[in-house]
Length: 398
Image 1 (cartoon, rainbow, N blue to C red):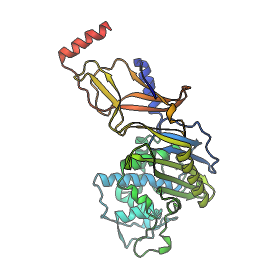
Image 2 (cartoon, rainbow, N blue to C red):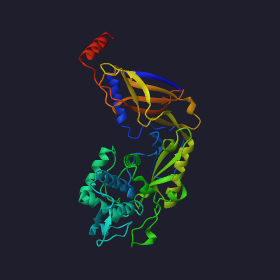
Image 3 (tube, helix red, strand yellow):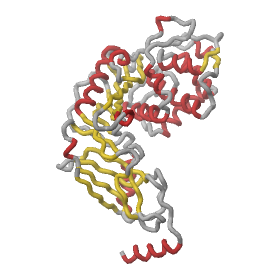
Image 4 (cartoon, one colour):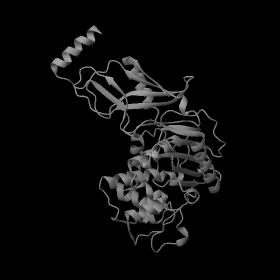
């Protein structure tokens, strides 16, 4: 694998930063023809490599139905992390929650239901009653919670999403996109890994509620042992929708967790419950077989070490904390070349985690495989007065 380092001017650096910030899910890896997929829109995303593998109308406005509950869950998980709630805490069931139409957990105002059971009711049973109870528990009112949902969507970069309610029932202006849903699902799993197992629960019901209502509607959980989430949705307007995710062990990536490759498929507007499962499975299987994951750099290792000016340290290490993995068409892993694009000169200070430079991965014909934003792995402090003065003279001469 050939590797080079390139430099850019201050203006080029600014322009590149703008273009990178606009690509919420990284560079598309679409060089292979995806299978025919029956749905209004879809997107297949490689979480491990941060690459879009396939998409159809990923930015088309659609109704999300109960996929809305991914954002509701995100905010509840965030409240739990901030210790504003705890899993054992019992929340009241309001009249509004009790009377919610559509999918239900079948709770009523006589009950005080623990947060953990409400989460299971929302995730496994897609209960609109449980969703409203959680929204009121976190936001005080449903209206305030919806404001929080939209604020969080903006913070996550979900630029084409507008929420009108926490449960996903049809309402004018309640829309999102396949790309925004992939962004939300990815961030939810990365930020709240301890809560992700809830999405793999196949059956759940709250004591005293109908047993016939205990089955997770994500039928892939019963078909494919590598699938561990995430959420189904359906209304007459939205059709049948599914955000599915799978993790499979891949030779060459590493052992244990490091060797697992995770994909997310977002399918919107399928014609039936069975169709959404079949088409989602088709997308996931195609992603794992048509593309192979290649680890270019191990976790914690720098992609490159570059000389810096006016710093206490002589070099700055650029890379990613989890290393660098890219997805390439199967059989092409040995043909890659890399190029690090970075500003010049590199003048300290640099903070750990600071975005700095881009790793471009391409094929021998220079067609782009991936464009990976790099970070500073270790802080480089500014040198003392004499060191800065000496480097200033050297830069002037240069």
